[in-house]
Length: 155
Image 1: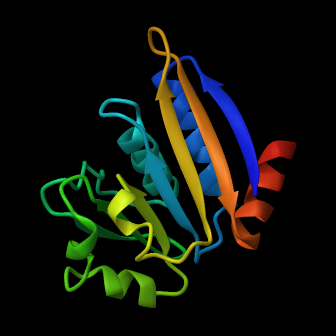
Image 2: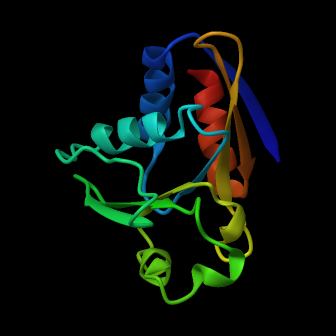
């Protein structure tokens, strides 16, 4: 397991980090976004989706749980599990996400999904610091996520 800690001093810097991550995605990755309300999870998701040429701007999926976007190279799924319990993961359409082997899965508030989704993933934790500063910790679980993190470390 590898970790990388980055610091963002503004929303623009957070978006830049998200774009760098997006440029390395090849399809088949799972990204978990963790952190308190207002930390910047949805900002990062929006920037990743935008990087793939999706015209529709993602919003927090809290009220619909799951959004699907058609990117230039593959589908992107944005799930917001804020209101779910672990047992509620079944029969809500998440199975379709997992069957799409080339899709990128972007999951906010992933706690109820930790046992539902494969363990290979990139976990992104956004921590609030003073002012607009954020600490963004990337933790790679699995070979694909580790390769992504290694390349990101070199940029």
